[in-house]
Amino acid sequence: MKSYKDLKVYQRSFSLFLETHRFTMSLPKYELYELGSQLRRSSDSVVSTSVERYGRRTSEADFIKFLIYSHASNLETINHLQKIKSLYPDLEVKANSLIIEYDVLGARVFKFIEYVKKEWKT
Image (tube, rainbow, N blue to C red; front, side, top):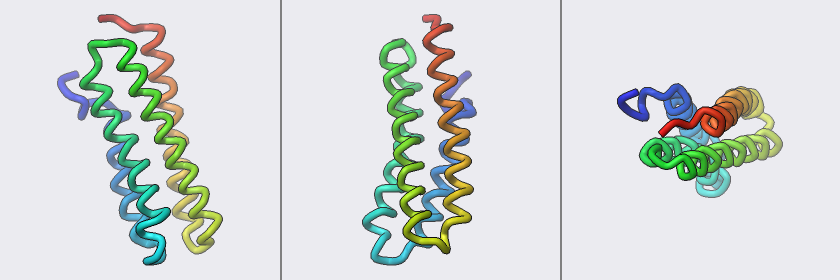
């Protein structure tokens, strides 16, 4: 592995960030800077902590800490999508699709956390 860009978790979280960002642009104008902004920030955090985590890979504790941050941001993103789904029924189909994708990503991050805890090698 030469770069964080080689990690499947990074690749998927980046792709989902782009998809989520575009999705927020379909929110009502008054919501772009409220719930839309929160959703963009949390989905960006999933990606950004992945990059920061890779930069801290020489320390097991830091590596795991940033995996946990990424997982928490993933859960926050799902929560924002649930709110959008409830508030804007016309966006429910796309929100559900993103929720499913973030659920899969969250499971991958969680499995990666468990792997690092068991198999860490410096």
